[in-house]
Length: 109
Image 1 (cartoon, rainbow, N blue to C red):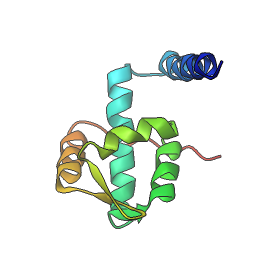
Image 2 (image 1 turned 90 degrees about the vertical axis):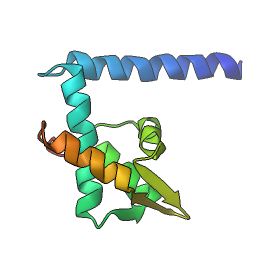
Image 3 (image 1 turned 180 degrees about the horizontal axis):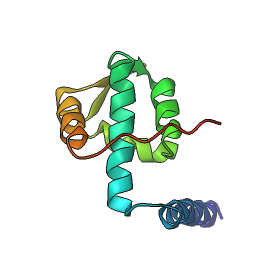
Protein backbone atom coordinates (compact mmCIF):
# COMPACT_ATOMS: atom_id res chain seq x y z
CA UNK A 1 0.00 0.00 0.00
CA UNK A 2 2.89 2.38 0.76
CA UNK A 3 4.19 1.84 -2.75
CA UNK A 4 0.83 2.81 -4.24
CA UNK A 5 0.83 6.07 -2.24
CA UNK A 6 4.37 6.77 -3.40
CA UNK A 7 3.18 6.48 -7.01
CA UNK A 8 0.24 8.77 -6.29
CA UNK A 9 2.65 11.36 -4.82
CA UNK A 10 4.88 11.09 -7.90
CA UNK A 11 1.89 11.60 -10.18
CA UNK A 12 0.76 14.62 -8.16
CA UNK A 13 4.25 16.12 -8.34
CA UNK A 14 4.32 15.55 -12.10
CA UNK A 15 0.94 17.23 -12.50
CA UNK A 16 2.10 20.26 -10.47
CA UNK A 17 5.12 20.51 -12.77
CA UNK A 18 2.93 20.22 -15.86
CA UNK A 19 0.63 22.95 -14.54
CA UNK A 20 3.63 25.25 -14.12
CA UNK A 21 4.71 24.59 -17.72
CA UNK A 22 1.22 25.19 -19.09
CA UNK A 23 0.92 28.47 -17.15
CA UNK A 24 4.18 29.89 -18.52
CA UNK A 25 4.41 32.97 -20.71
CA UNK A 26 7.71 31.73 -22.16
CA UNK A 27 9.06 28.37 -23.41
CA UNK A 28 9.77 25.89 -20.58
CA UNK A 29 13.52 25.76 -21.29
CA UNK A 30 13.77 29.57 -20.96
CA UNK A 31 11.77 29.52 -17.73
CA UNK A 32 13.95 26.75 -16.26
CA UNK A 33 17.15 28.61 -17.19
CA UNK A 34 15.83 31.79 -15.56
CA UNK A 35 14.70 29.78 -12.55
CA UNK A 36 18.18 28.27 -12.06
CA UNK A 37 19.83 31.66 -12.60
CA UNK A 38 17.53 33.17 -9.98
CA UNK A 39 18.43 30.62 -7.31
CA UNK A 40 22.18 30.88 -7.96
CA UNK A 41 22.01 34.69 -8.04
CA UNK A 42 20.11 34.85 -4.76
CA UNK A 43 22.53 32.43 -3.11
CA UNK A 44 25.44 34.57 -4.32
CA UNK A 45 23.70 37.74 -3.11
CA UNK A 46 23.54 36.18 0.36
CA UNK A 47 27.28 35.64 0.42
CA UNK A 48 27.41 32.29 -1.40
CA UNK A 49 26.65 30.27 1.73
CA UNK A 50 23.40 29.71 3.61
CA UNK A 51 21.88 27.12 5.89
CA UNK A 52 20.27 24.20 4.05
CA UNK A 53 16.76 25.26 5.06
CA UNK A 54 17.41 28.76 3.78
CA UNK A 55 18.59 27.32 0.45
CA UNK A 56 15.31 25.38 0.15
CA UNK A 57 13.42 28.60 0.88
CA UNK A 58 15.34 30.36 -1.89
CA UNK A 59 14.22 27.61 -4.26
CA UNK A 60 10.61 28.03 -3.20
CA UNK A 61 10.89 31.77 -3.89
CA UNK A 62 11.48 30.82 -7.53
CA UNK A 63 8.83 28.07 -7.77
CA UNK A 64 11.07 25.05 -7.15
CA UNK A 65 9.62 22.09 -5.31
CA UNK A 66 11.94 21.03 -2.48
CA UNK A 67 12.74 17.79 -4.31
CA UNK A 68 13.73 19.77 -7.40
CA UNK A 69 16.54 21.45 -5.49
CA UNK A 70 18.54 18.21 -5.41
CA UNK A 71 19.88 18.88 -8.91
CA UNK A 72 21.85 21.86 -7.60
CA UNK A 73 23.93 19.45 -5.49
CA UNK A 74 25.33 17.90 -8.70
CA UNK A 75 28.24 20.35 -8.63
CA UNK A 76 26.61 23.79 -8.53
CA UNK A 77 26.48 23.83 -4.73
CA UNK A 78 27.93 21.66 -1.99
CA UNK A 79 26.63 20.61 1.38
CA UNK A 80 29.06 21.25 4.21
CA UNK A 81 27.57 20.33 7.55
CA UNK A 82 24.31 22.25 7.69
CA UNK A 83 25.40 24.81 5.11
CA UNK A 84 24.91 24.97 1.35
CA UNK A 85 27.76 26.68 -0.51
CA UNK A 86 27.99 27.98 -4.06
CA UNK A 87 30.85 26.28 -5.94
CA UNK A 88 33.10 27.66 -8.67
CA UNK A 89 31.10 25.55 -11.15
CA UNK A 90 27.93 27.18 -9.80
CA UNK A 91 29.40 30.65 -10.22
CA UNK A 92 30.44 29.81 -13.78
CA UNK A 93 26.92 28.51 -14.61
CA UNK A 94 25.41 31.63 -13.07
CA UNK A 95 27.64 33.83 -15.28
CA UNK A 96 26.81 31.80 -18.40
CA UNK A 97 23.07 31.98 -17.75
CA UNK A 98 23.35 35.68 -16.90
CA UNK A 99 24.74 36.38 -20.36
CA UNK A 100 21.49 35.20 -21.95
CA UNK A 101 18.69 35.52 -19.37
CA UNK A 102 17.28 37.75 -16.67
CA UNK A 103 16.46 36.36 -13.21
CA UNK A 104 12.83 35.85 -12.27
CA UNK A 105 11.05 38.06 -9.76
CA UNK A 106 10.77 36.17 -6.47
CA UNK A 107 7.35 34.84 -5.52
CA UNK A 108 6.07 36.16 -2.23
CA UNK A 109 3.86 34.03 -0.06
